[in-house]
Structures are given as C-alpha cells and as structure tokens.
Image 1 (cartoon, rainbow, N blue to C red):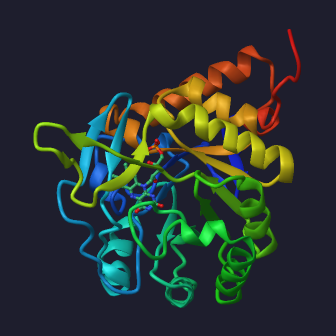
Image 2: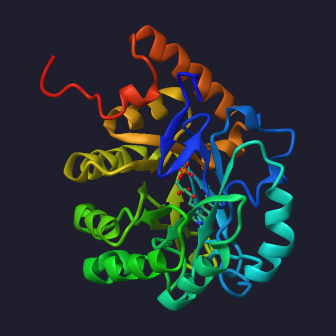
Length: 307
Ligand SMILES: Cc1cc2nc3c(=O)[nH]c(=O)nc-3n(C[C@H](O)[C@H](O)[C@H](O)COP(=O)(O)O)c2cc1C
C-alpha cells in the first residue's frame, strides 16, 4: 500500500478510495469485465437479510433529472444463499469485500452479523439502517439516537469485523445519529443513503413507483450529501465514507476535502462503468498538482473563510 491513492478507511486497507456502493454492484462479479477492479478499493455487496426478501412491486426504478429514483425494497437472496453461493463467487474479486446487512428488526441484524463474523473474505460489515423504501428496518433506526447506539452496540457484541453504519440523510440533524453510531462501536459512518422522494405520472394520475415512495440517488443529491459529510466530520472527526452522486474525480475530491476517507459510487456507474478508473486517475493528478503526499493528507483539508 504505497501508492498515493491507497488509504485505510473504516478498519479496511483500500488500494484506492473508490468503493462500489451497495445495490449498484450486485454481489460482485456482475460487473465482470466492464469495471476495472484494479481501480476499486472495495465492493459493498447487495444487502443481505436473514431470510430472502422479494422486494417491492414494480415499477421500481425511474430516471429523474440528474438522478435515479428507486424502490427496490431490499430484494435479496437471504443469508443461506448469500453464504453458499454469492460470497464464494465474490471471493476472487481483487479488492476488499464488504457485506451490507439489512433486517426488519434489530435481532435480525444481530443474527446476520453473527453469521458473517467468521467469513474471512469479508473485510467489514455495513449496517444499512437508512433504507427509505422499506417500512421496518429503515430510517426509523436513525431517528432515535439512544436506540441507534444500543442497536450498533448489540451488533458490535457478536462480531469483530469493522462496522460501517450507513446513516439516513433526512434527519433534523445528522450529528446525534453519527455520535450514537460511534458510541455503539462503529468504525466508520457511511454518509448517506438515498433521499426519500416520489414521482407522479400525471396522465395516469398515479405514483410512478409501485411502492409510491422511493429513494433519490445520483448527482442530484450530491450537494445535500456533501453538507452532511462535512457536518459529520466537522462535529465528530469520525471516519466517513461518502455516498451520494459521485460521478467523477472532482466530486470524489470534494468529498475528501469535506472529510471523507473514501467515496462510494453507485448510480453513475450505470452510466459509465469506467468511472472508478477515471476517478483514480483524476485524484492521482490532483494530489500531484496540489503537492500532497497522498489522499489521506487531503482528508478534511478544506480552507475556511473567504478567498
Ligand atoms: C438500484 C439501487 C439499489 C440500492 N440498494 C441498496 C442496498 O441494498 N443497500 C444499501 O445500503 N444501499 C442501497 N442503495 C443506495 C446506494 O448504495 C447509495 O448509497 C446511494 O444510491 C447514493 O449513492 P449514488 O448517488 O452514488 O447512487 C441502492 C441504490 C440504488 C440506486
């Protein structure tokens, strides 16, 4: 790990600070030849629950200006198939592999964390406590700071893996949730999930999504998420992994300057699978030009005040 873009984030050594976001990279091998995995620091696999989930009724995805609205509803294969088929298939990926854990109630998360603890291929567990598209196991966790601390602490008890807690963006203030997750034992905070949103088909006079509501992602949400990353880093000094609308190296650099140690790419990957390699090349050039030693030296280095 002596390249300028290598960094340790959330207890994991990353070859680059570019991480494929959960739900946008399947269970790993789906991107096959399209993505240059040499440019990828880690892949966060599609969320896994104790039992298989069917997800929400269609339509589940639509394009919006500069973004995507999705209401997949955490469709997933369940723990058994994850362990016997999906995780072995991800074993050959030349980057760190992180599981994304979902559940309908806290005990379910704990059971999944305990079952994944012995899996040597997993570098960390990301707890999704912020999905806007499911009734339970979603954002409600984040709104109650005491509950969130207790919840993370109970997952912490059953695993030695680093825990990344993926927070919701739509809270009155994200800082209490961030502090609660850290107090519960999180190594890093993923900031943040999709923004609750909806779309209407005026001709049909119906909501577009089968679930009515969905989560907005893509460049449209980036200014909102950038502020949240800055708030969390500024107030807690935590290790932050940014997730929201990264579509190039400048977006990645903006997140790092605001305090993120790594960035996840999701929606923009569908448009441009070459994105991880482009981000890494752009960051390397930026680090050289700005005369920093490496990406770690850039973290939080936002100048304050006026020019
Ligand atoms: C189709 C789709 C499926 C997703 N599934 C998950 C998921 O299973 N678990 C999760 O934590 N986040 C999920 N997300 C959220 C992404 O991981 C990411 O946090 C979010 O899309 C913001 O990043 P982006 O703007 O780069 O897409 C999903 C997003 C999309 C677009």
